[in-house]
Amino acid sequence: MNTLHKFAALALSAVLSVCLLAGCGASATSTASSAASSVASSVAASEVASSAAAETQATVEFTVTAADGSVSSVLLNVTDGEKLSTALAKAGIISQEEADAGFVTTVNGETADYNKDQAWWCLTDAAGEMTTVGVADIELHDGDSYAFTYTKG
Image (cartoon, rainbow, N blue to C red; front, side, top):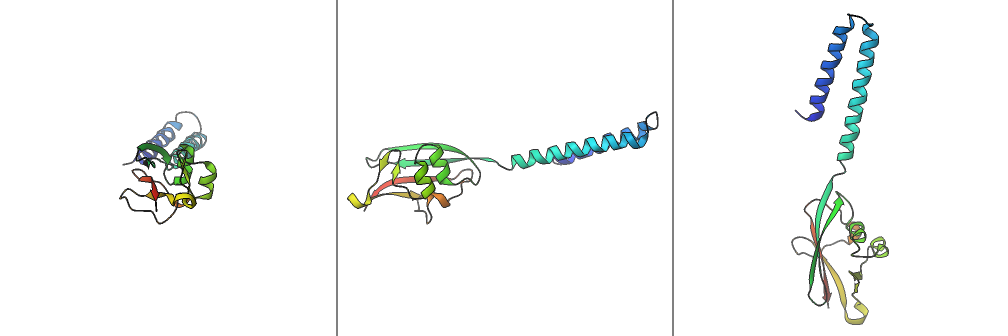
């Protein structure tokens, strides 16, 4: 039984107890009404907390292989479903301007200039396959892994 069901069962027990005890003094209607109102407020608060928990956190590994072959990796702590472009900009791996454009030429301060020497940043997924979409179109989920590799030709 989940926490919300346990809480509802406990709240219902409290309401019934209050109703039984109401015969010993206060009016049953006002006591039961007060208890029911309390239960409704508590259930509503639980639903709000559950909704907030729906924005779950995710950890995503991102690796960059620079032109000189050096490799750096970072774990990105993101909200599940957050766009890769947003996460990379927050981490300072790409600029906010490139994140907004969805087209990346500079990673960790290193620019790949295709017009100069046919260099570009290849974005790959966990399987090492080149992605079919750009950073602005990728939604992140816990355990995902992506990489940028400086590539020529």
